[in-house]
Length: 225
Length: 200
Image 1 (cartoon, chains in turn green, cyan):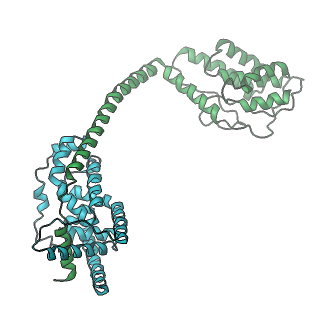
Image 2 (cartoon, each protein chain N blue to C red):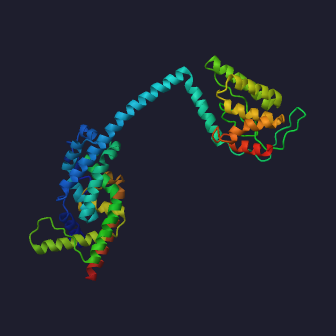
Image 3 (tube, rainbow over the protein chains, first blue to last red):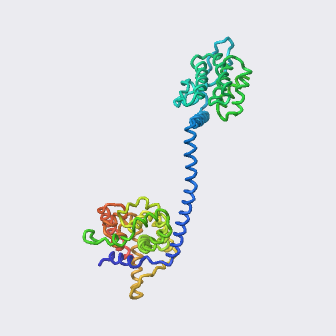
């Protein structure tokens, strides 16, 4: 028999599975298993009711049309947070009236979702095409679309201002109210109504709408001062 | 290494009492089930761990580590291998860093001139026991020089006398691969033991 065979046999015989530490190891393992099981039970007891409440709430919100509004609102917020600084030297087109605009740098307002591909600040995307769930939403969308068309397609600041005012009069807290207010301010800038424009831009610059258009508003205000 | 075609794989019979219910309870961290499995398999697992690591403290860590990982690992257990083999497989997979720890500890002991206080198996005379212990320690030192996979293969096949097929199931490798690992491991171990003998 070779040295290696002897050594293998010696290793086999030398090391068996008996140990004084075995009972202590057993106790530790059982304790760990009990703790893990208890945690799992607590988790399940909490998770199921929470999941049930969420499911019922979601079903109710979807049935009542509120879910869509919440999602739209969230998208609007998200959009506002991710809007970057306006493209450099994007000067607003001159208004159709004789009043010259101040030489300001600003960015056009994009409509809020549901036009998810609209990410460029230069291109005015199509107005939202929301699948209507009730007449109220339809009416609000209609007003917004009108204002959007006057502002971005026809580029008529006077008509746009009237349309934004009409929208905000009817829906002061509507889904697109922040966008409408900002675009209204831009219309005022284009019309040369600088004092009103400053007044309209100030809440954005002061962060009343979070970070939404804050930097743009600050730049516009700076140029108007 | 035993011939897989001729030898009876006793492991399959040894765990035939492990039913689906026990496995299911283990998956749910049932402490009683874990206690049953520990009682049934801890000695085999500890023996494997000691032979693989050559160090009692590291072996105990590996035993604990393995049983702690059992309930999660059982999510992938299909019942196509005996539970004992499955447990040894978990240990083999988790042993890598325990091997490193054991090697470091052994090196520290040798630097400090501290002998491993291991003497368990009965033997005929004190001389026999001392000789066996010395041989086992020599082999453990030689194992430290092997790649991890070869180390596991030789412990499973040559020290624990499992078939290459069973060792393959345990470590999740083909039987031929195990045979190759054992072949290379034995070749290297012979050289190492020979050179150590010449140095004395």
